Length: 181
Image (cartoon, rainbow, N blue to C red):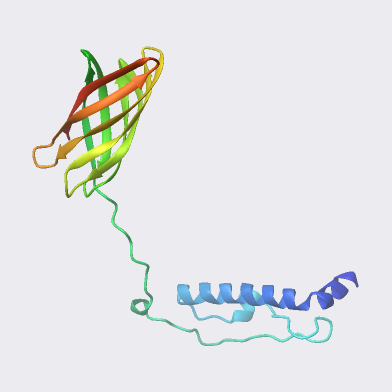
């Protein structure tokens, strides 16, 4: 009795759940392009007062929707990523750099390893060939940060520029060079 009383008190919620489940099952039937008796798939759909009456929905003919009328969302093509490898030199000490960025411009990400090690982030603007950003890491056990600026030429597959870094009491300037794959 408690179940019937609960259903009577929450009739709208129950009917909403039944409708949603029914619509999902009908959708599956339409997608699978099968003609079937819906009663076999979902049983009796309860309407009105649960203890008083039940009604069922019969369908002997399937609904067919031509696939060419169903639209699919447009997909955004993945950007072509360019990889660059090179070096950073500060007062004769060299570190390796590896960069990745979209060919059409966008975010630069990468790593520094060797004398200094850490991460690189920035932006590449294709229209101006300008590359700029920041470096964060460690040089000789000293936490260091820096900025870089320069250009990347997609035609010659090269890039070069300057950088300025600081760590502890030191501030140093240097150059960077990369070759694109």
